[in-house]
Image 1 (cartoon, rainbow, N blue to C red):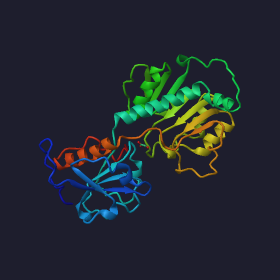
Image 2: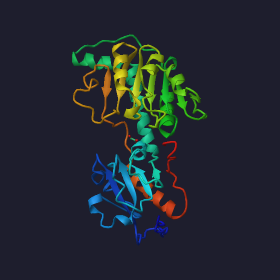
Image 3: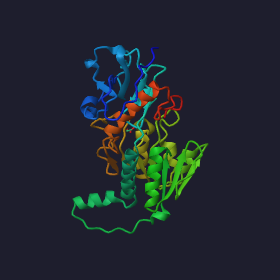
Image 4: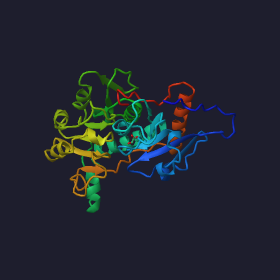
Length: 328
Ligand code: GLV
């Protein structure tokens, strides 16, 4: 494998002599349309059809790359996600075995995610579904007060950048928070962390409202299933803002119809977009949003890819490198 052409750190304000060449790889989105204005002087990104010399391409910015998307680029060193999740890169059959995979680590995305989760926690805690339905009928109905936040437990599945931000935001509203982490971790104030064996189940069984922000790995695929819903308190709510493949959608539907789960917010689906006949569209207890819980900053995304290429060129490990074996 060829060495990466060295990228010299530049004196402030000077344009680089030879920016690195990267390619946008997506079977679903026009990434140039989305990221074209987010430039970094160290990097030129282009669509596959614009690449004249595939051997010059050393990095890719990816969202669900075509299965053979990486095949054309023999010298590719970095495959960067446009998002926090990298499952879509790791599962791509043409990903070179030695490519470094990076994710975006964006605090502002985590804050947005926390705001989105907090909105849905409040939505379910105050049974806003009912108010919403009554508004459409012009009904002013003041139901009994819900349990106090301090008597209501919010479970957060995942305690990385996203999970921590969500847990902190929800704890700040006064809810009791129990977060499931893969490894033991010190909780932020107001957040109890459970880890190790069956941490997900142990957090879920206490959760009146459960928020999923786990990364997708073999261990977390299908984790939100009938068995987990059955362990939750009857009438609990589910907020699914992780990855679609983590939830068995038929199991949620059955749990909703049985009253075991009272209501859900679903932002991510196994197949996106879900078909017109997907039962969640018209379900009165499911709040559907189109994978829009939060966005990464386009500028941070491109800058972090350029940082990763530069780090490799200088013999350093990129900060946002993911552990390919762990899957995040
Ligand atoms: C969005 O889905 C993300 O992974 O950030």
